Amino acid sequence: MQAVTDNVFRALADPTRRAIFERLTRDGEQTVHALTDRSGVSQPAVSKHLTVLKRAKLVRHRREGRETHYTAQPKALEPLVDWMTQYGVFWRDRFDRLENLLQRMDK
Amino acid sequence: MTDPVTTHTLVIEREMPHPKEKIWRALTEGKLMEQWLMTNDFQPVVGHRFSFRAMPAPNWSGVIDCEVLVVEPPERLSYSWGALGLGSVVTWTLTPTEGGTHLRMEQSGFPSEEGNNYKGAKYGWQKFIGNLERVVGGLN
Image (tube, rainbow over all chains, first blue to last red; front, side, top):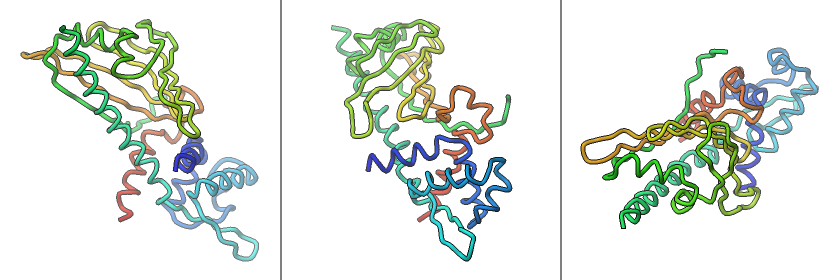
């Protein structure tokens, strides 16, 4: 589970990859060519980014003739949202501990 | 750069029956911080780089890299919070109330690891997080 989360984090820590992923989420399935045209980076760079996204299971691909089509897999984001929730849990717990400490400081 | 980025923020607030000076100590004295937060080498000096150390987990050293950003005793304290390749900013605000202090913790940002210039990044991490929650929320 942690390894999956780690891959998702790594994949999305890069703004270009985030942009690619956002585009796939927003606009649906795209070919590598279409993604390259609007990304401002070279096709090999886009392919490399897609490989990282694929490893994190954030995208899926299928081949059709010479073209590879990519689709976003937003479900793979769940660990990230869980992580945000976990931070909420983390800080609430720390607040409890802080209150405890403040009471002890009186003594 | 002043790109309009909608910030994703986690806010936790609590009213505490203690004076703010006392809470400030718990927030800024390393030994006290260790008792409720994590072991650390914090110093209340702007620009000081320090780390929090939690229990290491698989794929995570347990180290949170931080830098002190704001020290305004006993009202405002802020430090960057870098863990798992993602940075954010933690800000504490203490406001006196009738019965003690209103303590507010805000963790915001979640920029990319490309550095501190995330405000200039075309796709702000904060904005992204906001979007992804919507995306994930729509899954079920």
